[in-house]
Length: 408
Length: 63
Ligand code: SF4
Image 1 (cartoon, rainbow over the protein chains, first blue to last red):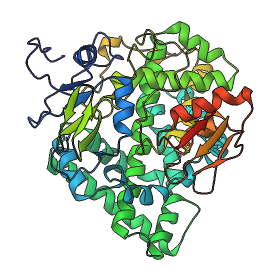
Image 2 (image 1 turned 45 degrees about the horizontal axis):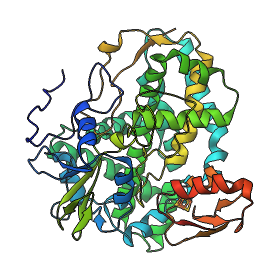
Image 3 (image 1 turned 60 degrees about the horizontal axis):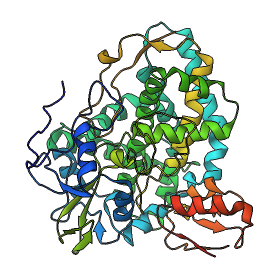
């Protein structure tokens, strides 16, 4: 059930807010309402703090590109979206919560495998993984949970190969990753899950120090050997890539499939297109429309910043809501319409600024392969329940569905 | 049209390559490489798109 919507215009509304169950793909109505009011508004987080919220597209891009806003989660005033994240960020920072130049130095150590040509070379392998999963799906019982059978294993298999993590351990790391992205996980639960994952990755890195393979963890192990990187940093980085590499794309595959099933005309366009450019564009629109990272990007001001007729004071937190930016009617005409033919490439589903998602080329290829393959090979695909029965991740750090029962 | 890429600013997102692969490439570390400093008028729109989506504001266009 949705929480009651704040009605007193002077009260500080909460953030994040659950999306509306009747319109599960749209950003929370309260957040869209704030977008129509002012460029910067105050919101209240779980811990009672009241950072600024940015909901408009242009402000989102301008502020995330502004070096006066820091991503350093250990700084006073940094807005934390949950107790779990607050606890974890300050103990095991990765480059996503650092500023340049350290951020750039560490990030550049892992950009190579995500370069466009390297990712394109993986496309046939991604296609094979997806085809095998669809084979199993068609051979198995129905109805089936599409998350478990397809949406989660696709990116998990891909990121495991890329990192050099044995997929046979997937129960272990998927369970622990799930705790990390759950908003209501306590600080203790979150810390414990993180510790288990880091220990696991650290073990793998140790092995790859002596027996390197052609994978990303081996290249991190080599940097540890060269003294460029500490073991602890390497393990946190490996963990970040493992968690980020499957949670987000898995949610996009499942939620995107549901959005297509609910929009049959758009589904038919994607299913029947032979044009890779169209498919690529359709994926950009799905990314815009769904914006699954729906708890905002978070920053803290290093100095006073004049913006949108307000002053963000040094030490104040700023939360930037990409899901609202991607539905800004000033930028995307009729944003509530899923229109696979529109040019949505400017969307900010991967964030903006120097911290923009590192794995986006890989995510794109996975989505470009997963949706059309699934729709073409399972032409009768349909929801095996009603949409109001689908359990949406209103409480997650990443939006999506816990389960998607489908049949054909 | 003249294109300038600030390699120090680049974060290797690959967005420029997706927008105009004949104008931009990436080196072994994923950092942007400019293939054409003066792309033709026909490429102008895609190059502008590349500059617009570059998350690090590393692409500048003159003229
Ligand atoms: S779009 Fe910008 S940040 Fe990304 S690779 Fe190109 S120049 Fe670098």
